[in-house]
Image (cartoon, rainbow, N blue to C red; front, side):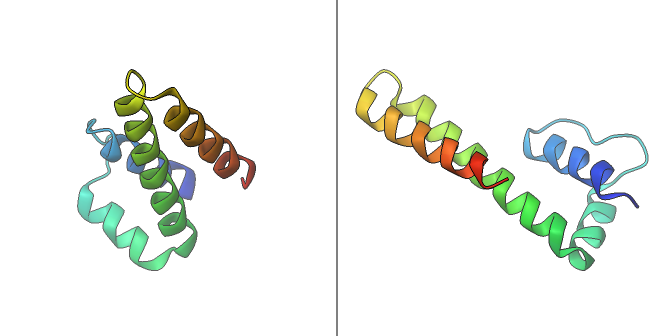
Length: 80
C-alpha cells in the first residue's frame, strides 16, 4: 500500500473524520507496524495538531505565548 494513501487516512483519523474507502483502523495500524516513515509522519502530525490546539487556547489570553507557539510551528515546518 502506498504511504501517501496511508498518510491521508492517518490525517482523517487524527481529525476525527471517516477513513477513505477500503481502509480500516486495523489496516492503518498494520501498515504503521511495518513502516517507520509513516510512524514518524504520524508522530509529527500529532505534535503539530497539539501545538495548534495550544495556540488556539492561548489566542485571546496571551499574545506572547501565541507568538512563541507560532515560532515553534514554523521551526517544525522548516524541518520538512
